[in-house]
Image (cartoon, rainbow, N blue to C red; front, side, top):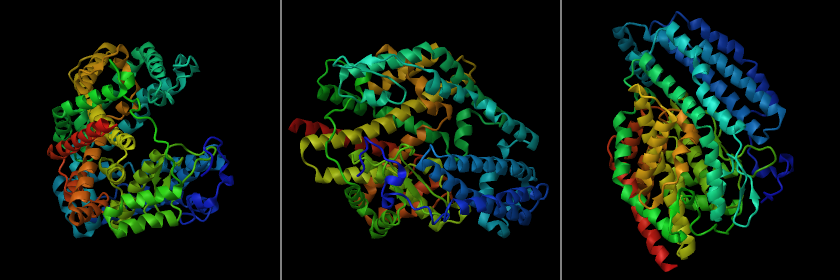
Length: 601
């Protein structure tokens, strides 16, 4: 494994640990040649304008649009992957910029289609949807027809589209303020050393075992937000008003209804999540109390909620060991699933190690015609192993969808996007817990599990409440002032963390640093996705073959049905509180295990 302290240039690393992109394009020249064919194909879409009047013409348009999107997807994916290899390199940056420009051209060339189709009389549209000549696009047409009451005239849609950049300005203002303009005071750690505080290292500092460093960085960080809170409140209010204005223009009852309509998710899914999480608040209060006890604190502050409970596990794993750990974890999913994971390892779908200029973090990306590729920055930690399992879940979902659906239905929605990845993560931690009896290591694993629930179910549900209430305030004509937003957020933190948490003054400003709030009503999907993954992984481990079969069928459905229907097929009905209830009952069992394990230390 390369020394992660001294990063090497990409060309110095062993190619066997780098992804092989040649199945997509033999080289950059092949990519350039295909890019050159796009203009004519994009221009060809304009020829359909004014012709979309029956099943034959609409079917021809949808076939052409699918073929164009498929080609552009290949070009975009390859350029994105090449750029990630070394973000300093001009070649990757240029390819990425040029293909993005082509994407914008394609969207402009096709903007006429939906308004033109939906302008047809209702009875004509119903006949077209049911016409056998459009059978391959029936679900697409049903979904489009569902949105007819909220689709404006072509000139109105064009006007709204032209305002896109202006309506996106609040998010850009907040991003620039956080990423470029805000400077935080340096602080002292417990040994008196000076430590710089930045937006990128703040969470790392909050995860330190040095309590003085956590406290001082917490106070420095939120001092910065307090100094700019009027600007943040104005930018967020602008984003909320943009969403509520568009919702009103499109005849939705609220901005939340508009945001959820795209995936056909009813409001009760959102409301069930919040109500059920609130019912299980006592379990979170138990976890907060357990943190306080393990850390040995008289007072638990907000700067203690990310503190490590038992320190870092020093074990390091080679990439080959990590591969085997992932294979062991997914063994309950059957031999065919395991063989597909082995294929991913053997055929170099994965770019493993960090190198100079490489994109940070991890992701899975692929197209209908390619392997699903994985970028990681493997450093040998348990977290790196978990990341590999997580991204492999995404890739397996993509592979199954692409191999069982036509191209127009291969892409699954964001609502289900984190399910397969989290199933793999949970199978890994369950496998490790099954083998591990040493109390300190076991408590470390259990705390990781509990932190996943805290961060992905409880905390995201808290964010979902904040969004719901802030948008409702705007829709009632109430001002989203710094005082009102701070008070709303402080109340929610008090509700979600309970009596054992000391409510520091700085906590009320945290809402201002959450970028997801500028993408309205997205965060709740993290909580529903995680709860779904818990239900599915529990069924896979406890029920066996029938649950595995349902799960693989879900992985194979792509975007061929609405996400709630796909999840029902897998055995999870999010229209009821049951999956959230079951997930948080699991949280309580993990908490029981952690308390029993602590007693053995």
